[in-house]
Image (cartoon, rainbow, N blue to C red; front, side):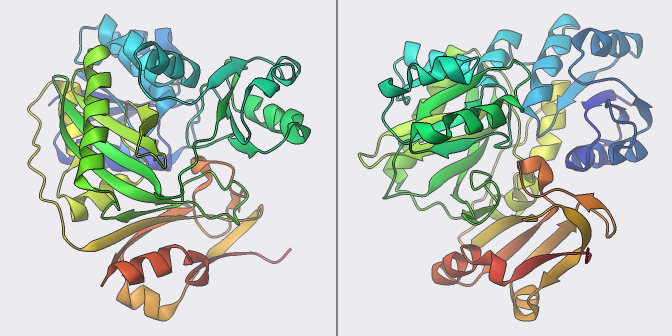
Length: 400
């Protein structure tokens, strides 16, 4: 029985904890929040912050851990690589993980190596940004350099809202730094999301999908839905593959999962916006229907240095995933789903919260209340329903 240390015990990490146990491993979970539910699925729990690299190293060495798993978290990817490297466990290079999980460093890496990348610069306060905002073409994105899940991300069209949006971004930055980058217009394409996997630095699996952003939500930059198949030509998909493979080579990446955020401009140029060295939240469920690729099993096998199984069979059907959320803070009451939609389209439905729990309006992916996988009969039905999901799925709160 191998000992697997999983960083984080939130609802997001429960699938990987369960999978590790199903595979016959002894599971240790570390989390700074004792009340997080993942501890109840583990063999052993330690109340340690997953950002405290030295404490994680001490406990991993003491327990003679065989593998360290980062799952659905940029924050945990850095300490996972640090501790794994010190213990000589399978991992990507620590320095490369630092680049991929920091927007400032990643933009610098892309520019230095002649990738397409938007004009961008990092600052520590809004006053300094105010002095240079004239150098950027509006609109621009404001992003914390070190957050994930679209927390603290905004788009502005003028300097008038700069201070407000910068302060919001800094609330989500551990380094107290934010990035200003020019927005990449894309009238011809959806924003592209994706999941991938490399073995010994070679991209052996990837799936791209159309991302959908509900404009009426409190944070319209959190992707709440994705649809499959991707609406891109084979030629453009091959261009994306080549850019990703070039990153893998330059950073000497090894074996593991990736989550992609990609923009294609109106000249068909590929921009790698994010290339996080971990799987995306919730997409393991979608992948098993669209490709039969078991990303959870392979994440664990990669951490153990075991063989990776990568023979995907791509579906020819129409699929989608949707994470539902609240527009307001309040006490969660339940989810109301339109009856015909529930019977005719929903394949899986998972709730992350219980009735009676206090919930927050959508600020980032961490505020998602649950997700569902659905299947459609044709492309027209897929896009009509996923782009009007609020008509079919409604979050209800207790009366105040």
